[in-house]
Amino acid sequence: MEKDVVLRMEGIYKTFPGVKALQDVSFTLREGEIHALMGENGAGKSTLIKVLTGVYELDGGKIYLKGHEGPIVNKSPQDAQDNGISTVYQEVCLCPNLTVSENIFMGREPKKGGFVDWRKMNEDSKKLLASLDIDVDVTRAVENYSIALQQMVAIARAVSTDCKVLILDEPTSSLDDSEVEKLFSVMMALKERGVGIIFVTHFLEQVYKVCDRITVLRNGQFVGEYPIDELPRVSLVSKMLGKDLDDLAEIKNLRVTQPTEEIVVKADEVQSPRVKEFDIEVHRGEVVGLAGLLGSGRSELVRAIYGADKSNSGSVTCKNKKVRAGNELDSMMAGMAYLPEDRKKDGIIPELSVRENMLIALQVKNGVFHLINRKSQEEFVDEYIKILQIKTASRETPIKSLSGGNQQKVILARWLLTNPEFIILDEPTRGIDIGTKTEIQKLILKFADEGKGVIFISSEIEEMLRTCSRMGIMRDGKKVGELEGEENLNVSSVMKAIAGGGK
Image 1 (cartoon, rainbow, N blue to C red):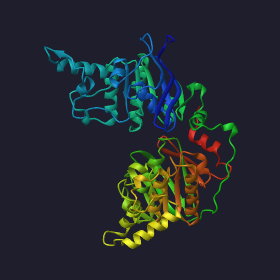
Image 2 (cartoon, rainbow, N blue to C red):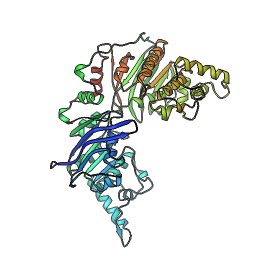
Image 3 (cartoon, helix red, strand yellow):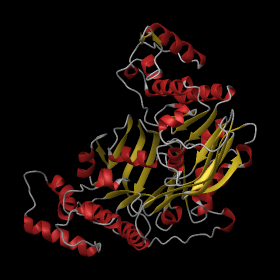
Image 4 (tube, rainbow, N blue to C red):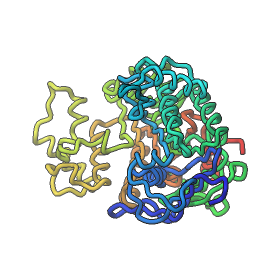
C-alpha cells in the first residue's frame, strides 16, 4: 500500500438472499484524514462497515490494513478491534450502570496482585479524556451524563485501544449544535494524531466542514471518491441520487385541480427535539412535498405536526382548531391522518387480519361505546379492498401475509375510513412495485381533488413533482425554503435547493 494509506478495501462483494448488497465496492482511507462515506438509504454504507468490522462475512474482495503483510479477514468485531479498527455507533454501546472508567477499560482492566487496579484505571481514564479535552468525573456512572458526553466516552474507549481506524456511524444525529462542535474538536485532535476517521452522516454542512474526502455509494455500488474541494454540494447530491443534472428533462406536473385559499393545517413556530423551529401551511386541494436527503428532518417535521413527537414550542391548527401538542388522538379527532415512514414498525399490526388493521383507527375515533357491528365492518373492508384493489385471499388474512404494497394500501384504507381533512404520507411508495406506486400517486391526486390537504414525502423527486403543487426543502433538521411554480418545480432546482449554498 501507499505510505500514508491505513486502510484499503478492494472489490468488496456481499450478497444476501435475493439482494446484492455490495458489488465491486472500493474504499481507501489515509492516515490523519476524515473521510465521509455518503449514500442514501440502501446504498450499502452500513453493510460495508459491517463487512470491515467482522459483523458480516466477506463474500468477495480484499481488505488491506497498514502493518499487515497481506489481506486481513475480520471474523468478528473483536478481530477488528484487535487489528486497530474501532466503531462508535449512533446508538451508544455503553453499560449505563458502570462508571466512565469501567466502560473505557472494559475487558482490559489494569491488574495489580490479581485484582483490578482501580486507582490506575481511573487515573489513566482521566489522562485519556484530558488529552481529548473532555472533563468528566470518571468514577460516576455514564447514565448520569448526556448522550453527547457518552459519545465522547465511547470515542475515548476506541482511542484507548490504539485504533488506527475510527468509524463514526451517524454520531451527530442526537446532538445539538454545541455538542456537535465539541465532537468535531475531538475528531480534529484525533486527525492530528494520525488516526484515519470514517465519518458516516447525512448532514451535508458537517461533511463540508470537517471532511477531507468523500466516497459515494449508490445501490450497493461504488460511484466515486472525491477530494472535498473538487465535489460541489449539488454534484454530491446528484451522485447520491443518481441524476445527471445536464440531462434532466423538465417533468410535467400532473395535478388536475388547483388548491384553494382555505387553510386546512397550519403550523406556527413549531419545534421538537429532533427538528428546528418551522412554519408551514397546507391549503385545501394542495399537495405539499417535503424534499431532502435521508436524515434531513422530513419525517421529524411531520411527526411534530401530527403529534407523534411532542413539540417543545409553537402551535398546530387544523381547520382553525388548535391541536394539543404531542396528542395523536387529538390530531385524529381534529381530522388529521398520518401514514408513517416505517409501516412495519409504526403502521401494521402483523398478527391481526386485514379487517382488524383497516378498522382500528375508525373504531378509536368512534369510541369504545360505539362499536362497529360485524356486518358494517365487513361492508367497509370489502368496499376498500375493491376500491384500492388490495390483493388478499380474504378480509381475515393476517396482514403480515400480504406484500408490502398491499400492506400500504390497507393502511391507506384505514385512514380513508376516518374521512380526514388532512393526510400526511411519509414514503408511501417505498419498497413497492412500479404499478402500485402509480396507483398510490393517482390516489394522492384524488385526495387533492376531493379538497383534502396533503403532505407527501418521497425519496424519489420525480414522484413528488408529478403530484405536488409546492415543495418544502429540508436540510440538517431545518426547513430551509420552499419551491413553487413551474419554473422552479423541476429536478434540477430541487436538487440545488437540497444541496444548499457554498461549494
